[in-house]
Image (cartoon, rainbow, N blue to C red):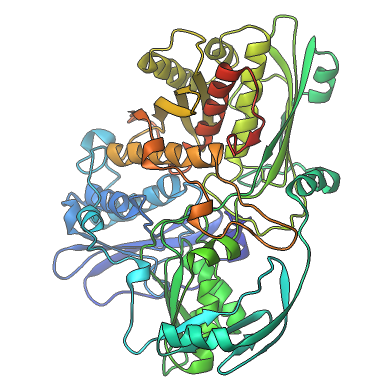
Length: 617
């Protein structure tokens, strides 16, 4: 799974100087154990230049980091010129993932800007640009269609490439013949001056593939448990595979009542609005330049260099803003395809995936089997907790509840499907299983689900978020159609209340309270939380990739149900601004609330506990 382990796998490399004129100061900072540099400089024209390897994919990162620089230097946000995601010009300060920009990049940028000013960081009471709503700097162009996305980029004289694909999902290339066919390993493709010509060449090419069968989803999930490897405790990683306290096994044995529940998650697609594309070209000096729309330019550079047998310093990645990513645009794929065709043809070559290629040849959110085994004491308080996630991952395993004895485990296993990062990683599935188990106990013990959660929470900010959300929602106790969920994810405290109706199923309203510490841009933070909750509706209710014994059946949006405007209910998203507390990253956390809250609402309406996602497929 692509996450912060990539920061170890691809260690920091040399970083090229960007000075042409003006004063500059580089301050080394420590990010995830690897030294990197964040640059801010005052240019000759008086404006401020700043540089980051992070990218903006619609989440407002350009605006936030510009606010940080402007805040420390006391200039208008519009005076900051931010260069993002160019491996020749920017530092390698980590991929744009895991909600790390706010907790890690923001303080580094602020520190660097303050150093240019020659003073300390400004205290919250001195903030001029931070802590206030700031419209997206590119908002007008995005709304009017004037903004240039990655798929809009063209270069003079470029050719177009088409990759030959097998009909089967798992296949090895045996042979490939035809005019202009370029082959390397399992890759085969063609390119031509126009896309129509390239497609015609691809249609005439002959390729033979040897394929392997696919197991049915239920057999695949059963194999996760049979082949899973027990975790080894390691608290030195961001997502420990084993989080425990006390003796969960002993506590389970002495519990007054016990429950064993099993949850499953289907693999789902990212379904980003813009398919990926890349333009690759070799210069007269032999250097390779690629224009693309990926979340981790330095990871892509390392992977492209390895695939092409080149030095990383001879590869330049320039990122143009992608139209969405959600985790699917972290690794190199279309970039390597374009580079191979460019090398063979001697031309600049553009490769753009179709929607079908996006569905079939990208990786998906992992399928999962999650088991909870829990016990309560004579008073009904949860006294023992054991949760096991097979295949999906360790993120989100740490419970927000004060269980005396607990063991939360990620059992790694093999999967026959391509899988990787998805917004919030495994935290969505882990919180779905955890909150559904809490809700199941509340129902079995005839306890109010809000009161039952509060009785197990020690964190005062999470308690406050739950109580505030209940008040804003107008919660008066258990009611048919009402569900709730909470979480403490990536240091953010959140609570969500929903009201639903059946026949047909529809979501009537949602109320969320989110506390991520200091709200650096309150309006954008609200947008991020709201967007994550809405995105979670699809995975909770409808989204799943379908397969038969040899191929993927889901190939287009017409047979893949994502949330629509008509699915979005009345929403109240309230941000708690704790100015004195270090801010947490919020891009991913909100999606972990949707499924368990909807599952609780469906249970209150039907009396049946939904144990699988999607719930209405």
